[in-house]
Image (cartoon, rainbow, N blue to C red; front, side):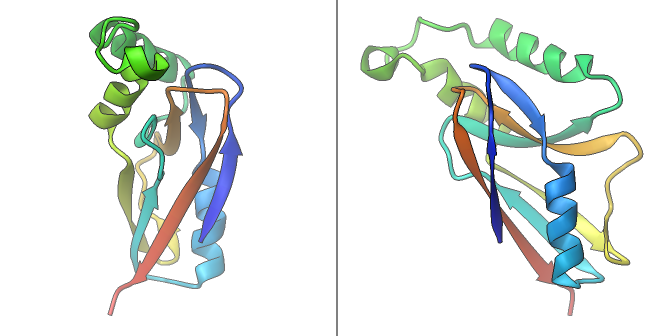
Length: 132
């Protein structure tokens, strides 16, 4: 199963929780694991707080401080090396347990796609594995 989502900024963290939850519900799986994966080298998947939008902005600011733009060898090719590095730090996937047909996210947790080289459309692949 998969869906697409579009960013509208050069760097953006987008909540994809509702889309993933709909796919889990449609699967009918009561107990198992949901893997969320993004097949892009300049995007990532993370789980974090969604109650305060400043958390996502803080993550972007921290990554910008850690990985400044414009100083990497890959920039000579297409000027997006920092996006590749940030995506590698965060990682392309997360796995979430499913119990009773629901994702077992914490009270303040949601699932996010991190786009470090937008704006663009991104594919998100969701694999749901039923517990046997």
